[in-house]
Image (spheres, one colour):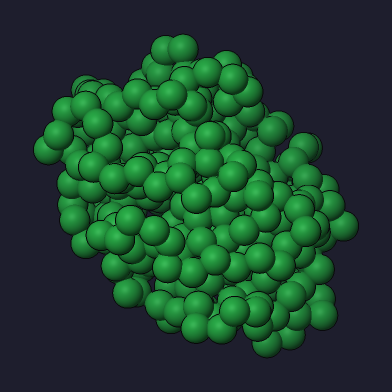
Length: 320
């Protein structure tokens, strides 16, 4: 059996983690979007960290006037990343500059809960807000390119298809997932995926028509968009709302989820009813952020309201 690899941790003192994402250019770099006072009121902080065998070291820290809820690395510039905030603003940061964002957008009128960079076209990113709108942006343009409004409740997550640079998905408190074509003003498909608010959403990196949803109902569901009347698989295990889901970039069967039950769980969907293969319960508060390292197979980062960022390589995932 392989020797355990030590978990690396970083204390985001005074700030509660909302989102964590590995760099798409460097294997040892990650960012965390965080908020003071659990994001209810107060400042935000963006942490950019470098991973060393001895631990996680700060490269940059950026402070904002309102809490940060999500972050996404640029797909075209290795030094840039975008954040979304509780005051409705979106900010573009450049790591070559120490203090201030290089661009600020302020079109959303409520909290912006999610931001995701286009993996295919690479020159756009998408945001979803509690103002019930979705917007597409280009980092070089001072205003949004498109706005979409169909959901009738807060939008909690938006994600681009990893196969088609014009296709994206959104999930909302209105219990639905919508599939969109950026060239068309109305959604192409609507799925009533849960009987509760849908907080989490991701696209399978190996199966073009497969998306994953997670909900306040504690359930994770796998959907084939060609057969939307019923989920392909339902994963049970979390004790409270599922807050985030990430599909592995290394396997079409592996996904990670986080929850208000203070755990991160790993799933191997080819195992059927026994899909849950690992439960990480070292966090002591709600676990919100999770990401896989594209360059280091098996490496996972999480962040939580306990002011901890953790990077680990669970043995279970290394055995798949």
